[in-house]
Length: 329
Image 1 (cartoon, rainbow, N blue to C red):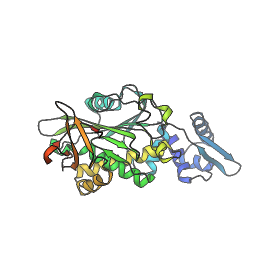
Image 2: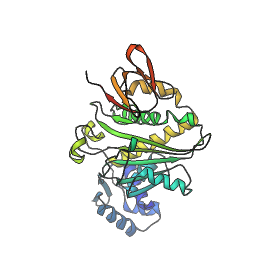
Image 3: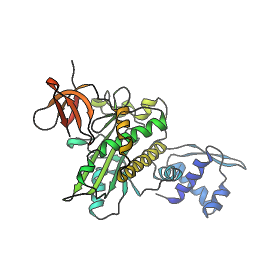
Image 4: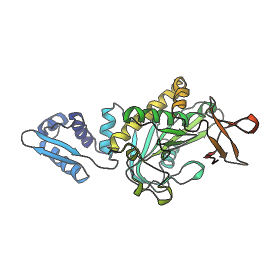
């Protein structure tokens, strides 16, 4: 990622559609006017559109419809967030790459982001379709050294924090389907989360939080078998989005959520956010993972994030993991 390209794009973002003088850019960034022109030409070649105005400068008119490292960095700088993010055009899995980097001793926290994954994965070893460049495939890596029991509600908390951010930033109330799916109001999946950890005897040594978030994908872009089940933020909102701006907001929200989790303040809003975004309470479901599936009516979650079911005879069953399906009557 070019720091100069990011700085140029940041100047355009801060101008908010007004012309930016090439002379001003050159002076502020300490390069020649020719160097600015050359960079703008390179940016044009990668999908940016600039309009030149005599004696006024340049206006940024269009941006790429895919993750662009320099533009993403510019948006993060504007949000005053500068995480260590490794941008990859393609990778097998961002979670796997984050795990490799942790094993090699890379300092945490850091993120791994890719335009495309060739072997993206979800919970229970499932494949996560991630061949489309218009979505966000991101893993955040930490070395938290927290007790094992503190980790249990982590994925739910990160999902709730993201739901709250999307509602505040875009006016769309997403739902969280226990334990790791984000859904649009019509019940279609827009994101899935996967948390993986390495444990010492008494603490969590390494932690990787991965998310696949459909930001601007359209129905035709999804495999046939999931077109009726999946959606994107853009599709749900009904208008075009700048994927880099949305991705920067998501990254910033997730990093804030991690800080709140690490500090312990997350618990103050956890229950209220869950009640607002939970899509399963009162529903008849079947939960299966190992052994016989359990059926019942969802009665919320406990303080550790486990699902509470009311089964036959009014008995209470607490389920800490599993795959939830709605039961048809």
